[in-house]
Length: 133
Image 1 (cartoon, rainbow, N blue to C red):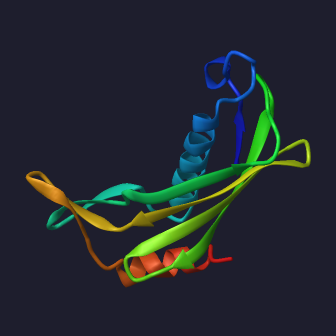
Image 2: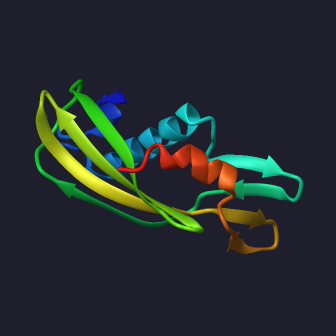
Image 3: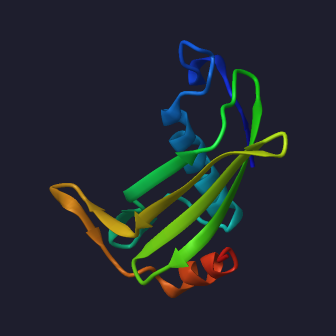
């Protein structure tokens, strides 16, 4: 997918702020899920399920500025029983800008308790297997 660096994404030097890379990666994850017929949040007969983040990192290789268009590649790097690790590559005009990864856990959301990790159903695993790298 692609994202344009907007003015509000930049710091005082006009360079994309480091925190925005994480938002770009998350938006790419959401697009991957939608493209797979899934969502970052859904309902089943027992309530709400989502994918809370348990780890995220980004290594910066170059700067991008206001109005630059960033290409974001996202792949499933690891598909576990309860978690997914995504890998990201962000480029601009053919040059690497950043690489990152994010681990999410399939969880039931409860009103009066912390999220509880649960096994990823087979039907979701099958949809994500085609995204494994």
